Length: 301
Length: 198
Image (cartoon, rainbow over the protein chains, first blue to last red):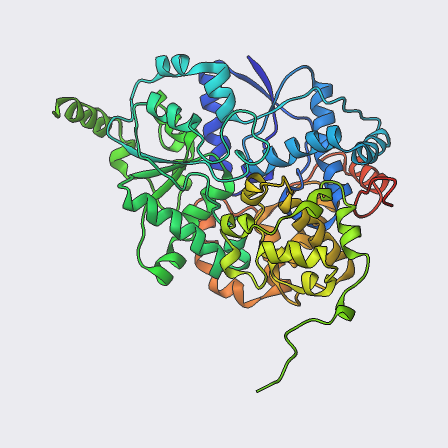
């Protein structure tokens, strides 16, 4: 199984723990990843606010280089990248005028994109290509008794997702259950985390983040699992400001790939779990405690 | 108390504005809006907006250009696409918000010192020159331009990022920056419109 890998800017910066956990987990499952040659920023939501034509060209350069790399799907872990690349694919098909602009720009750099390369999220690839059975067979330390709130955020599931529902996605729920976790019903799983508003308009942005944290705590979750670098940052890095505004609401937020890595036997440090502001409860990550807990859970009525 | 007129005159409209926005690719469906308010109901940020998304749709369609472009609403849209997925008339509301943001930036009539459009501009400049974003450097540039006091209130966050090894101070950049510049120039400027509407 081979994919071209588009990390995006976040996985080299604030979200580097996502890459640090994604790569060993994929390797462990026999998935081969080749980083996209000289990839550029997808443009995210910000470039789209400034110039539509140039935003499309930014995304298309990556798609064209990916197509040149071979008949492999483009693995795109960041939600903003996933949305923008898929949106550009749709725009090229749906709007001849956008297609013309993009093709003209690509030609100026001797590039071309015919629309063949598919943009896939790791969650999709892991559950649908690798498969839950193959993942289960690698689990040596199940997350028995760990209550996990699955949080998907917005841009992977809306509006261009090819693998799950826009409001009630279940792919990660099933994956976490296969890892042995106790999946907490989390109705806010696709509610916006505030995006970049946490930094620009904290009154509004941080409130959205707070609502998610509060609800996860209220539902008894030990940890929130996320699939997006910006969601992870918002839910993890602003606890002191949120505490000051609305009271203490402590819960750790980790990448789903970090939880996978723990069950495969990797150490917390190998998976970038030391980069969290709010650390995951050591009871949840220590192999001995995990073994004990799964014992006691098994013994419980 | 300052007495202000709260009802608009017909003369406040800018004729042709609705047609221009509906002429942007993906925004054509706006004319079929039934003003049901589903967009405002699904929007997680509408409680902070000066005009609700439903009102923005009505204002655009009625040519109230200045009111829409000066509003905070378009900038508070976080692009979660909840409204777009729910709209019973398949209006791409998020894309209309983008078209309005692009117009506001192009004409320079967004709310002054409001950090969101400044972030968008700083972001696009960094991508143009380096090909990639270095988030920590981007945020520092934003603070310097929009609100330097924010640096002081965020020192704890900055220290946390240094402690967790996520504070990057070396610019991320691509190899073939000239190639990217050529492509961006070849794209031309602004909004892409179907030929008949241009």
